[in-house]
Image (cartoon, rainbow, N blue to C red; front, side, top):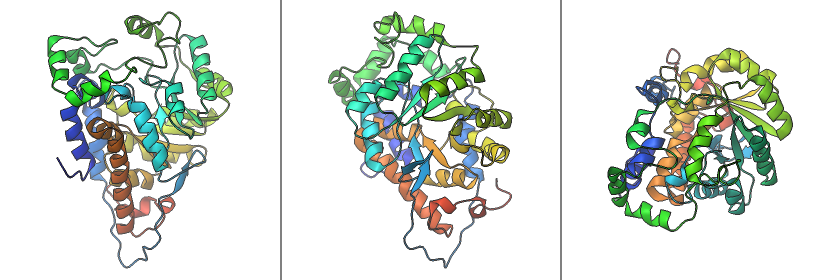
Length: 381
């Protein structure tokens, strides 16, 4: 493949170059994957109003997310095991995002640590936090994010229990991965990936191993993780984390209007309408389907973002038209990373930007901050 025109081209190339267990980890949903498919499929039902004879000079995609200037209202979502899509993946993606002028969000379940990413970037990035039973570890993790200069904390609330992902079970994806003969043969068929992984020391969960009590290596990680899901998580914990963090707080995993009102009441700076990419509750509504009611419920009380199913700049502008102030892309940048490394993340962001800019122009607008429901065909959303 010599010409890459869209995110799907990056996906096809990533599938060829990334070992099956790690590609499937990124590109899969839970159970029947109906919500995973709906996340992207529901965007197709939303139609634009095309406008003509409008002055389209000096168009601008610049905006802000939680007060931070962004080149376009798009952030890289927190994704676990990013460093297994490509060696040093989190560092590469963070550098591409910084260069482009959009936020990068590092996952708690990253391969490269907070300190690794901070050492290889020059501007603040965001950090995503899971709440675990080991509160001393969470305190230390928050302190590490502060020390690294992270400018926002993204608190994920929808992982108290883990959704079953059939592909991960079939592939033997665990911590550490099960190196079956089939997996070893598949990895051997991906020489670019193997060369990269042999050339890096970053192959474990950098934010956990050596930092959580009793987790000294990958073999001890699995038992620790299974014990850490906190079934008692409540809004009181959100308040505690907000106070401990003291900076910009974004709450991720909101799919219900009542939860949106609770998020607004918590004092958080933003919420993300998200069903975890269809990886948790299968049969739930798509993120874009849930977005309008949540925007209507909270109004101007809290900044509303969304993620899930975005595969193009056209999807971005549809989300903005329905009230999101910013969106997150996860799988698209992972496809780019798996396909071409850092250059692939650059390509992903350039594709999204170009599609967003051209669609905005076709709809008769010059400034992305002016996008609203007027650009959509009534009855299609």
